[in-house]
Length: 281
Image 1 (spheres, rainbow, N blue to C red):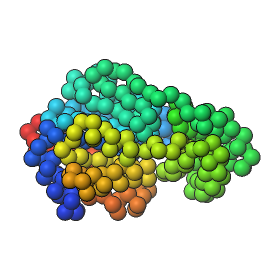
Image 2 (image 1 turned 60 degrees about the vertical axis):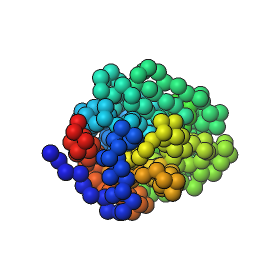
Image 3 (image 1 turned 120 degrees about the horizontal axis):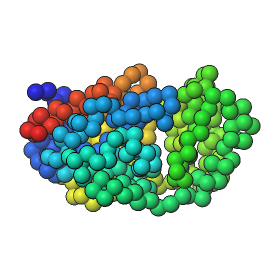
């Protein structure tokens, strides 16, 4: 039986103890890219770690809920994750587009608030905008279904330089259309304000009346969820913050706030299996 790694903070240790004492009230919430799925050069090729679904299927029947919280469209995360039709995951939910979309496994339905006009306008402007800024070569635009649009620099000759050169101009472009820019690892995402993983996670935890929460993420976009968990801790909800750090690219802003750091998706899978072992799953 695998041992659960010990969180490095007192609050993390208390949250883990609460999860193990009352697993039926616990919510395990996880980012997708970099947490359940390894980071790959082409985001369209991302797939869940081979052990992710089996580990979730072991754990899910014994806890209140499993939630995948992602900036991707909900349906895309479901396909890339292989979450549909898994008997033990009937109550899994995917909160896509930072909560603007939701997929429930029991109904296999996606509910959405629809496209944002600012995103629609930016999507049309971006190709010419990147060209005028001398950043077209090597950059790649990802359309996130009308709720967000992202510019990736990972394929550029100098990904860091391209990222730094585009951050301010894209922030200005976003502001014109009442959007905000969310930075990540070699990606700048333009999306409506008031949409983030923290808002989505906190609303879901209230909905299911969670008794404890484990949240795992790997990038700057997960900081909002970390902040939400820390705020909920002040209100008495035990919360365990996990960072999936597969390599030296993992941002210090995230790992420095985590109660527990594990080695990327492989480490997340090991943690899920260890939790399942501990509660007798």
